[in-house]
Image (cartoon, helix red, strand yellow):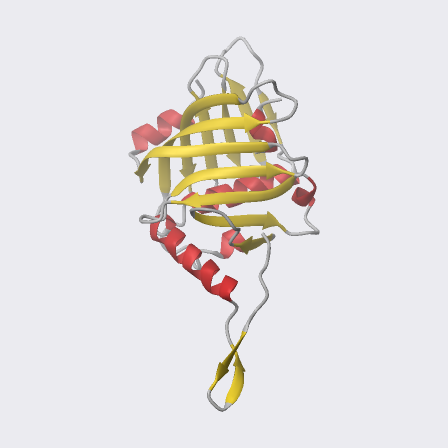
Length: 224
């Protein structure tokens, strides 16, 4: 199976004492989360389409060594996500609402087209929202919060964790989608998809181009 198909905790609030009386203070984690989202929105807000290079690594106990590939990502609002591997033994994966297509780069191999599972749909909606919040889309964080819980996990860097809601089917397969943000620009530098079984899919991004030309977008949308 192609590795992409399967593609943190809350802190307690504190009470601050003001002179003469006690008053509730906003939980520290909420302020941290607000800062993370503000940083992320610097890059995502106002973006209609984004083209970037990616390097993908799948880590699994079932593999003797990590599985790696590289390619080009297209994220275009409101409903298109494309990942095109560079190599002939890779594939082009295209997701739109209600449709998943996986077309091997080798034309001799059969393509797959089907309705995506609830897990794939959840992942599609949140990854697309991370890259594209076009003008007039409303509250930038709304799509990130849909069927999810947002937290700031412990660890180095500027991290944001997106966790499927407990009663959502995606929770059975996805533990967390951890976002690594550039501390200066807010760009998504890396995504860690941590699966419920412990396997991990790591995707790093580079060479981003916002609102690429229509010719480049059309070329990425065409079959290989």
